[in-house]
Length: 344
Image (spheres, helix red, strand yellow):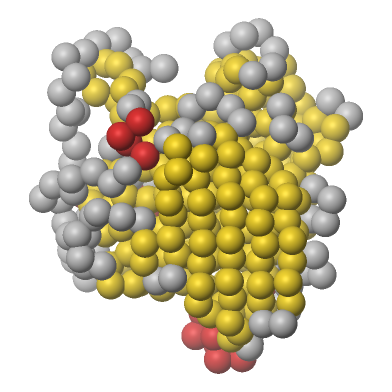
């Protein structure tokens, strides 16, 4: 819901790349996740074009049923912002808001101990790199959530690129079918997930911390929980519940997390109320987790470190079992994730 004097706009053309403008840190990204509830085989995939910097951020993460994690990250060279196709990862829009196809051909690092990715150089040195092929067909099963917030007359809102995370953002619950091939292994998959798209200037350090928890309990029941630290000891709570073919927006969302010795989430409990007057209690148990990071030099030469822990998570709500992700983003201050320090 937009603030007074603003509105949210979303058009079929937004499924395709936008003119990047002049902001050096313009980013246009598409993200997909999926988990097969029968086999607990899952993964997530992201391509983020940064055309004014000449590369795309390409991430592949596969959660295998035996606990191994396949991972690859590249800054793949691109020229312009005409397609989502870099580093072997390609996204095709077959029918806007309804059908998309994702494919990947390249290598993937297979980690028997995923937490080794806390030291990427050592992880890539000490684990096997195998050929990988991915093919997934995505089907939208929900309405669209989000879009671009604009002024009432449709004009763009002014943004400070140095402090921006996105100009526009939308999400959708999905079903997906396909397969992963890793070396000589072939894994068929049929499951549920969530996809999103965003565009506009982005620095990963523009957000103090967040907790983002997309989940599916089947084809017709899902949630996305969002709690974002505002950098001033406050939080912004939101998200949506997908049920009976419609989204019911979340009004309040309190998340309490449990942690291991490495400050990675191991479980969570969430209390939710919606604008439609519903309340939900959700518990989550992390099945497999990989820690990632983004580093950038500030103008004063100091190093800024953002950590993102990606946990494949089993969720329970109303007697149902579902699956999804718990994505925790934190700026690391004096060695401590600042969202944990804030009690989330």
